[in-house]
Each structure stands twice: as C-alpha cells, then as structure tokens.
Length: 180
Image 1 (cartoon, rainbow, N blue to C red):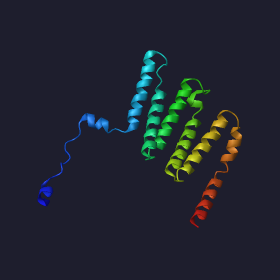
Image 2: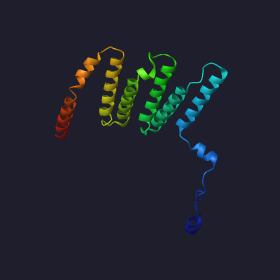
Image 3: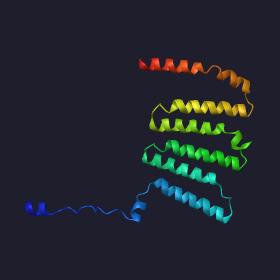
Image 4: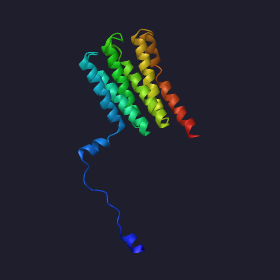
C-alpha cells in the first residue's frame, strides 16, 4: 500500500506562459478600477454631460494607484498615487477657473501637493524620513502661495530667506540630539 501512495505523483503545474486572459486576470485591482473609471469618464463625455478633461485621467490614475497600494498594504503607491491625484485636481481647478490666474500663477500648489504626498507616504509607511522633505516643500509652497496672493509681502519673504542658515543650525542640533 505504501508503494502505491508513493507511486502516485502530484500533477505538476504547467510551465507554459499564461495566456492573455490569464495575464489580464492577474492584473492588480487598481488597474481594473482605473479602467472602469476611465470608461465612465469617456461614457459621460460621449453622452455630453461633461467635456473631456485630461486632468480627470491624472486623477483616476492617481486614485487607482493609491487604492491599489492601500488594498495591498504595500504603501509603495501612496506617494505617486496621491501626487498624481492632487496634480490632476490642480489642473482641473485651472480648467474650471476655480483658481485665479491659472497654474502659472499658482505653481506653489504643486510644491504643496508634493509636500502632502511625502507626508502621506511617511504616514502610510510609518517612517519619519519623508516628513522632513514633505514639511519643507509644504512650507515653501505655502509661503510662495501666500506671497503670490499678496497675503504676505515679498519683502517679508526676502527677510525670512536671509536667515536660511538657521535651518542648518537647527538640523545640526537635531542630528546631535538624535544620536543620544
């Protein structure tokens, strides 16, 4: 009896390359969500409810990458997904005239979006490293945006920039304290 059970062989998995259908079936969920969302965008545009807007494609791709990353808990897509989504939103706001002066006058929003994306990435991955560049980009973007809208004067920004060595001093103190 023992010889009979050992003589039975388990079926070996096929070493052939998967077919097109099998490759599509293995695609990530975010890819499927992006296809569905893009299909809805194009359908709504064909019906005439909206005019086609390429920033929506950026937003859909960003949302799909972000969703896929969160579902798989890989977190590697948090930064690119959130940045693409926010970048698409900035360009959509420009197309819809939600922001005054266009993207050319509101370029600091891109720095703010980068800063938020770095911070979301740090939060998702539970690491502190991306918080520093995220905070710096967010702060610089906010200062330039406030100056662009004349909520603070460029002279004040110029005076603040004169004290950039304070950042070096603070970072050096941080590194010394961190070592202990």
